[in-house]
Image 1 (cartoon, rainbow, N blue to C red):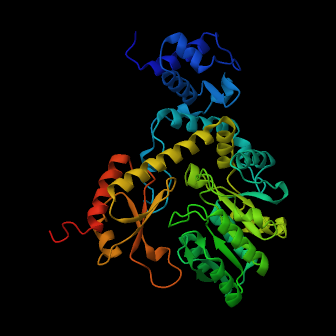
Image 2 (cartoon, one colour; image 1 turned 45 degrees about the vertical axis):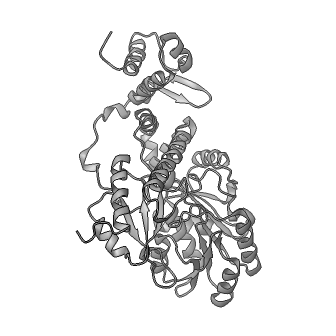
Image 3 (cartoon, rainbow, N blue to C red; image 1 turned 180 degrees about the horizontal axis):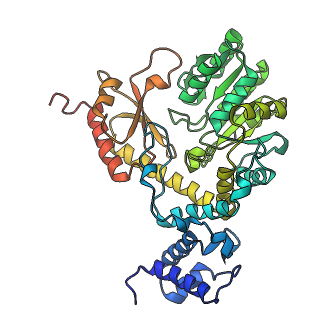
Length: 453
């Protein structure tokens, strides 16, 4: 009996059987539950053992198909070659960005890392130029993922782009001229403010209520400004975390139809929200651009987005606009994401992000009880409206040396003076214990405890 953990012994046994020729490339391993019964151990122990073997590059798993011994060439250059993190690539994140919680479970991290074996095995062709819309194979994989998440797929109107930001920039470069108006909510994603400034557009904030953008306010704004388009982020809206109701989505669609105004639907959190209503774009096939980002579900390093163009748009013009901005989405990122989707890692990671976000939201609700906080169970952030007499500058000053990411309302405000409010990010690399400490400090800062020493 060795001193090693049981799951490591299982991985070692798999390696020993491969070296002895008892397991050959392509052989299918027995189901994990059967192995657990035979060895008299928990299923989770066997699962971790298989995951460790995947991490080493010895085997690979496919949802619905089973687990198989990998071919030798598939393991060459695999993730086992890099066993320690490069310190130069640690702690370079921006905590003020809205990031998903990061996985810490070794088995899940191993599954994610195993996808790099597929990237390594196809490295040379992945370094070539590819279609600006993504390869045919990657679009087929995208179709599987989109349909599994309740989204429609139109092959002739679909492109994989280098992130939502790139898609939105390309779309607006086609739809607008400098000096034109672009409608959005009064509190909106800072990225759209940056893009509008780059393109010389005037952002017009349209009031909203608890259900989302107000249809009558949208109607007035359209007739007054005749905008190039309407930009909306209707699911887990950044920064308020609100999700627009299905009935309100239909009302907004009717207003846009009536005035023939195009919609840019930034569905950045579509793959995070489990029960969001269908996109507004479903009601506007001739007018809506639907942009479903990948990074909010899997991490900002995967700068990818699934973009569907309206029927009236010319795919060739959109492709040319994308090419002039970013040339193409990274084939390396596409290969990794494709592998994750095909072997089930994407689904497992999606489930983790939802669970972790809900856990952090619950923690925030407990600690910030008594503060005016908005937050949805699957959102990565809170929207905190400060009590009278407390300023956002004071709170941010008190929290300056904390790891938790806080951004003032100024970054999101389009119409009127910024309110005394803050976006508080709960995701990213911050651990639960540090998050708990920082939330307690935030509570004290908001309630002005000990401010006078």
